[in-house]
Length: 155
Image (cartoon, rainbow, N blue to C red; front, top):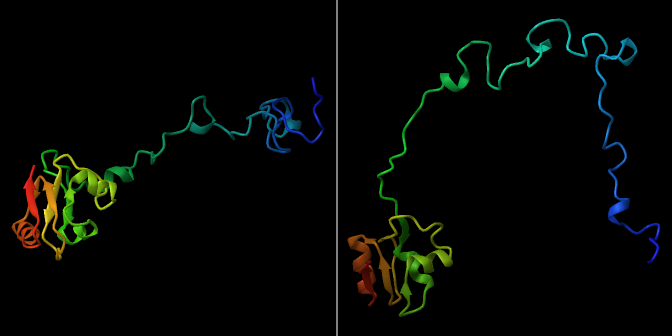
């Protein structure tokens, strides 16, 4: 077996940096320690007791901040959420490409594939001949896709 060189690192020679590990404070072990008698907790009161202290956010019985601030709005779990893309964003594709929501996600045009699928809006112009497959189209989006020689297919 080879002997370990002095500067070589191995699992049995690893130790914490100097000063990183400090010994545990020994409380209540005499006046000379600086932490005798009350063990650094002062005299009486909630903080001196066993299990003492208050939970985070407790304001001594005063109405806490999180209850003073009004609630506002709600999340509608029945709302139809679509991944939205405009016609101008489809210019990145070549002619005769079949555009799907997965393809748009891969190209990072759409950040997330939403539960209701893709909705195409009619903002901008389109010069490429594309077959666009989506769950919903606006009238102007259908007009612009078909004007460019493409096709808008509802899935």
